[in-house]
Structure formats: structure tokens, C-alpha cells
Image (cartoon, rainbow, N blue to C red; front, side, top):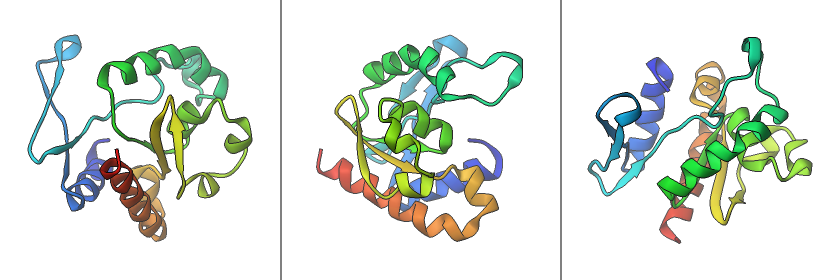
Length: 152
């Protein structure tokens, strides 16, 4: 998340005492480095490969690329996953088709699981910039994620 969406996300995380992990190095050599405060957030794309011809990703694309995401999660070992946006929700809920059929407003506000890791679904910062009325719901989701983190 960059630009205004990145600023919004950083401000939301800072309100919880969380910062993005800084990356040390460049390109493939970049490694996450813990930052102060004690809680840090590792950000990643839910879809590790792009669909052909630049079309919007679909559930089938998420399935094809799922092994990359699973490997990354295994390496990072997050305590909680905050899935921000439709694509992120698709990636972590792809094994729950009934839940995926619901709009994001029904998916958010509840603790889900991905390979035993607590998952909170919420709106993307890009969406929140266009729909500021939803920021209160996103704040509740962030607090749910923080509560899940404290109970891990």
C-alpha cells in the first residue's frame, strides 16, 4: 500500500502501536527486519502471480498461486493475518466457498482461520479512501485482530 492508502494504513496501524516491518536490502535479497515497537506488521500481496492479460484475479487464479502464499506464510509465521480487500479474502478463505459467496460486509467482523492462524477480513485502505463511512468498521476489525494477537 502506497500513497494515500499507505498513509492511511500506517496511521491505522500506529493507532494500535504497530509498524510495518522495514525491509533490509533490495529485490530478492530484501529481508524483513523487526522495528520498534514490539508489534510489527509484515505486508504481502495475497496473489503472488498475475493473471494473464491484466484481467482482474478470480478464485481460480488464487488457487493456482496458493502454494506461493502458503509457503510465504510458513516462512513468516504470522500470529494473526489481516486480510485487507476482496482478493486477500479470496486467498485466505478459498477453502470456504459458502463464506466466499457472502459480501465482504458479512465476512468481516468475525475471526476466521487459515491453517490454524487467526484471520480477520477487512476493507482495503484504497476502498476506505473512497468510502470513509466504512472506516469505523475497519477500526473494529483492526481491534479484533489486535485482540486475537493478544490471545495468541
